[in-house]
Structures are given as C-alpha cells and as structure tokens.
Picture 1 (spheres, rainbow, N blue to C red):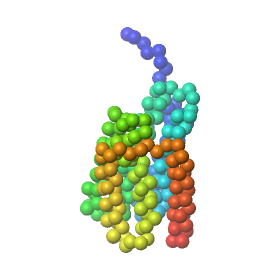
Picture 2: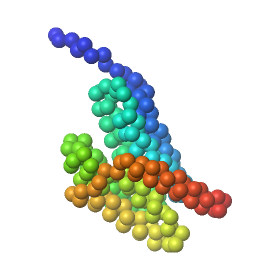
Picture 3: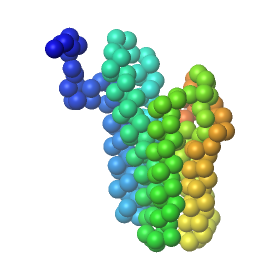
Picture 4: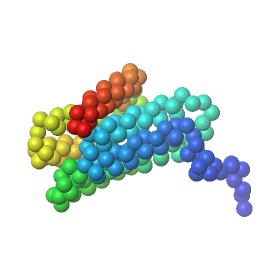
Length: 214
C-alpha cells in the first residue's frame, strides 16, 4: 500500500489561515444580517451585510499578498469562500425578502430563486472560473449585497407594501443577472478603495437613520 507523504492538515488548521479567518468574520457579519432581518430590523441587517461584502473582498486580497501558502490552503480557501457566498448573497437576500414580505407564501418563490440561482452560479464558477483574467460571466453574487443595500437608501420614499414589491423585483432581477451570460468586469485595484468608501458612507447613513428611529 502506497503511503501519502504529505501531512494532512486538520480542519481547524485550515481555518487558522489568515484569509480564511477574514472569510469567517464575513460569515459572522452575515449571521448578524440574518438575525436582524428575521427580527424585522432591516436597516441593521443591511449594515451587517455591507461589512460581509467588504470582508469577502479582503479575504482574496490577503490571500494573494500572502507568501508561502500551500496549494491545499488556496483550494480550501476557495471552497470556504464559495460556501460562505451562498449564505451571504443567496440565503440572506432570501430571508430578507421573506421577512420584509411578512413571511407571505407568495414571497417563497422569490426566496427559492435567489438561493438556487446563487448555488447554480457558484457551482458553475467553481468548474469554469473566469471567462478571462478580468471578466466574469454574469453578475458576481457579491454585487447582490451591494445593490440591495443601495436600494434601501430609498426605502423611506415608499410604503412598506410597495417597497416589498420593489425588493421582490430587484432580487429576481439580481438572480437573472447572476445566471446570465452577460460579461461583467472583475473589480480590482482602485475598486477596493471605492468599495471601502461605499461601505463606510452607507454605514454612516444607515446608522444615522437608525439613530433617528430610536
């Protein structure tokens, strides 16, 4: 029997890798987003998901800048990131939609479609990857959180029932874009600074909204 001379790393050993720690902090933000959404605290949930997006971007940046990472660490990190993306940008929007729709059965198809679309897209991406080094096929799922957060800036201009329909339409549109064949650019370089500023600005705005609702 041939022995494998490569020492197998424990699951916790992989989790202690710095980029994976960053991914897990993003997952924690998503858990807070889900918690707040279930409780009907939608603005707080949007703040949490914005930070989840930011950590999702930075785990890859950290991974690319780290030296000495093994092939196995890189592969594990990619799989972990994909699993977290399903929760953050598929399950969370579904729960947000259901909660905002007062858990009406009519919102269940939309919730299923965004989760299924996210799972299909990420599975496809894990097989085929990018179209080229700078281009995705379809809209990357992390944009779901960015766009939904932007939409909530205008929530106060609509009644609850009207905005629930706006949110439903938006999430269905995002699912369609996630699964589309439209080429979209991979946002790198200066876009990291733009996203960081975006998260900080929207966090400030939404925190101000929360403060005024107390």
